[in-house]
Image (cartoon, rainbow, N blue to C red; front, side, top):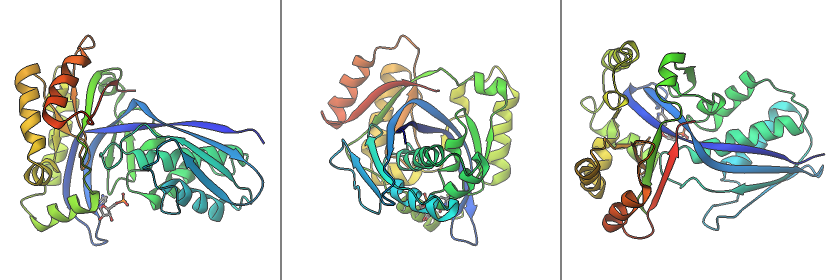
Length: 295
Ligand code: C5P
């Protein structure tokens, strides 16, 4: 059987309103997400041995059973009845603990690669359902265009074409400090400050439809993230630098997901060197900085 290679894009959240806690312990949200032209690459080599293994070029990445790629592989085998196995090789580019969806995107890439290797026993709808069992952020990676997600993340809808055009191809700078933020911690902290920490679902939907309905509204008027409040309180280095980027570059930076990565839209001709110098001066030489585009 031939190897299969799948690109696993990173995502950003341009709008992320956590609207309340559900009976199952998860939170409902309304979020606008956009895949980036930057991400990981996952190669799968089927070997017919009936077991799965994972190697990565990133020595920090846990390649044991806790990795979502192997979790996805086990789930795929259980639900599809496919008896094969093989080796995954991950080129890791998306920083971890960043709110850029790296682990979830890798898991979806694994499902896509396995489905291809197995002769497509499951359709995309079924694969997306499976992926929701792996992580709330997984289903969004089945649409490769800017989308709105609702529920705990499983209701994914492509943005209307005209709105998608306002985002696709836009340049942005993504930056991440050397520390990570845990998603369960971020949700727990929001829940502890409830109800004031939630945005009412009506307010979230009104803000989203206001932006969708006004073709002249800049993307900056959509930007919002419920997690900025807990993340900025615990990690004051985030608002300190974002304030500086606002002043120096006239940018409107925002936290992505539950952090710790942030992003800012920039003109296509923006010089990433100037951004990198400013960000490194604040957060040190090991910070992640990259100029990318919305896919
Ligand atoms: O689904 P996932 O494993 O990515 O979620 C990690 C944790 O984040 C969950 O255990 C839950 O505490 C929290 N979460 C939430 N509401 C969501 C997504 C995640 O409360 N919509």
